[in-house]
Each structure stands twice: as structure tokens, then as C-alpha cells.
Length: 345
Ligand code: HEM
Ligand code: HEM
Image (cartoon, rainbow, N blue to C red; front, top):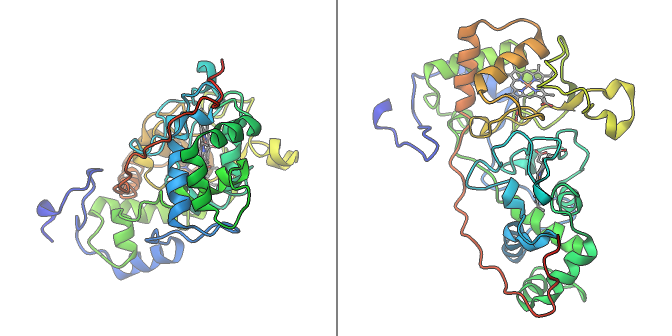
């Protein structure tokens, strides 16, 4: 293949980069991972329509869902920047620092549950959290409803999105519309997707070696499926406890959800799609280099310290998970009315 003439994507990744992989490698990979589909399935109880997506996109970008009037979903999940904020832990209302790193919204629809500890069952349940969290958007469902009902532009958009309902402007429907928009935040075009769909040359030779190591060393026993993660929970520190900066003692993960001793420091195996674009790493956000994250994982989860060249190949494979982002037109947001609540402190 003419690797040098392969079209570069916005991410710098290119398709048809390497020598043909063996059929065995492809078969082994296909048994563990699936490509991102071109369209996400509809979330349970929330059929996706074009009108819901339009409304959800407006809400996603609207700072007026927050009490200050300036913090939107996009503040912490910047869709132009990997769906993240790029800081160790998010900065929200009143410049407060939250306790955890913001995961990407891209491909979140394929995770079995949301948040590092999986405490929200789906994106609809998830979207209600940050709006109300004191350190994030610091608002109340009542004020959100009053705000949205005050603007004729929103009333029309909610009516179009929920045409059967007599009182469509509600906190619940806000969450449903955002969830519908988030089903469009998927990135099916990574070299690894091309590979899984049968393009044996989509990965470089090093990436193929890295994929083989990722499977044979055991990374894939936790990081598998469409998102290479996001499906199940594991102790962070199966073999060795990570350093306190990486796994701060105060955040015990799923223990806070289940109150079970067995869930101390248990977290969702992080989804690894677009991982090269979403530094810093881990729920604490204190690791900036993907190479270091790979080495830490090898030590904490597998105990078999990866040789530096093995970690490097795995790291190169992870770059094959980076895909171009979907085209998102910035929405026009309804103008305020005299009755719209004013921004609060
Ligand atoms: C987690 C979406 C607002 C910071 C998440 C997740 C999603 C999401 C889908 C889970 C991703 C995953 O588990 O893989 C949204 C939406 C928002 C919003 C739709 C607007 C309604 C914000 C804001 C901030 C923020 C304003 C920052 C101030 C975070 C953090 C997490 C998170 C820190 C991880 C929390 C944890 O695991 O405990 N968000 N987000 N989000 N988001 Fe947001
Ligand atoms: C997180 C890679 C093995 C469970 C991560 C992250 C990376 C990664 C890059 C950070 C994701 C992010 O910050 O968004 C790898 C590699 C492995 C490996 C390359 C093999 C060398 C494993 C194994 C398990 C596992 C075997 C389960 C026993 C987890 C969990 C997290 C995670 C629970 C979240 C940690 C946190 O709360 O911050 N992995 N992983 N990983 N991985 Fe792995």
C-alpha cells in the first residue's frame, strides 16, 4: 500500500498505513472488539428524532442551564477538543475544582453505564447530574424549567421534539433531548475500525504488534467491546496499588455507589476510544503522557512489567483508536425574554 499517499485525517491518523496483517491477528481482534457503527442504537425509552437532536444540541451548548449562565456541557466536554476539558479535574461553578477528570462524551453512548464509577445508568440519567451539581452547573430543575419556558425559541423546539406532550418543556425532556444529541457524538472512522471491518493494512506494523500485545498481555480482558472499555468494573490496582497521586485515597470509586467493601477502589474499565486525544489520564487526571498511563496500567493491573518497547508498541496501537470527529454546526440559541431568570452568583 502507498502509505505515504494515504489521506491524513484531522487527527493525523491515516488509513492504509501498514503491511497486511495476518488473518489470525484479525480473527483474534474481531473476537474481542467491534467497530463503531455508523449510527448508535436508540437509547431505551427515548426514540431519537431529528427534532430531539436539534434541541439537544442547543441545550448542550447553552450556558443558561447553569446558575451562572456561562457553564455549558461543552465547557467541560468541548466537542472540538476530544469531548473533554483537558485539565486534571474539571473547573465548574465559581471556579471550583471538582474531584474527577471529565471523560469524553464521544462514544459515551456505547458505555454500559456513565461516570468513572458507573453510578448513572444511562446518558439521560447522567445529564441531570452536572446541571444540579454544586461544583459543576449549580442549578435546580425548577430554575432550568423556568428559564427554558421563558424563551419562545425553546418552547417551540421542545414542542417539535415532544409533539405528543401537553407540557413538553421539562427537566426530564431536557435530559432526553441531550441524550438524543449525544447519540450523534460517535466517531466511527478510526484506523482500528477500518481494520476490524477487514482492511488488513489499516494499522502500521508497530500498531499490529501493539494490538497483539494488548490482547496477549491481558489489557483486552478489561478493555474490550466497541469502546475497548466502558463495559465492566475492576479494582484499580489489581496487582499493585497505584501511587497516591494517580489513585487518591479519598476517592474509593464504586464503594460510594454500592457501599460494599469489595468495591473499594473499583472503577469502570475506562473506554479507550480516542484516548490519545483525551489527556490527562485516569479519574484523578494526574498523568499527562499516554505512554506513562500504559506503563502504570501494566504494573497496577497486570503486574508483569511491560518492557519499554512493548509499552511503546501498545501506545502506538492506542493511537489507531483516534478518529475524525463528526461535523457539528454551532447552534443558534434562543434569545432571552424579560422573564428569563437572571444569572445568579
Ligand atoms: C461525566 C455529559 C456537564 C464534568 C460525564 C459523562 C457524560 C457527561 C456523558 C460520563 C462519560 C463517561 O462516563 O464515560 C455531560 C453533559 C453535561 C455535562 C450532557 C451538561 C448537561 C459537565 C460540566 C462539567 C462536567 C459542566 C464540569 C464542570 C464532568 C466530570 C465527569 C463527567 C468531572 C466525571 C464525573 C465522575 O465520574 O464522577 N459528563 N456533562 N460535565 N462530566 Fe459531564
Ligand atoms: C484505565 C490502558 C489493562 C482496568 C486505563 C487507561 C488506559 C488504560 C490508557 C486510562 C484511561 C483514561 O484516563 O481515560 C490499559 C492498558 C492495559 C490495561 C494498555 C494493559 C497493559 C487493564 C486491565 C484492567 C484495566 C487488565 C482490569 C483488570 C482499567 C480501569 C481503568 C483503566 C478500571 C480506570 C482507572 C481509573 O479509575 O482511573 N487503562 N489498561 N486495565 N483500566 Fe486499563
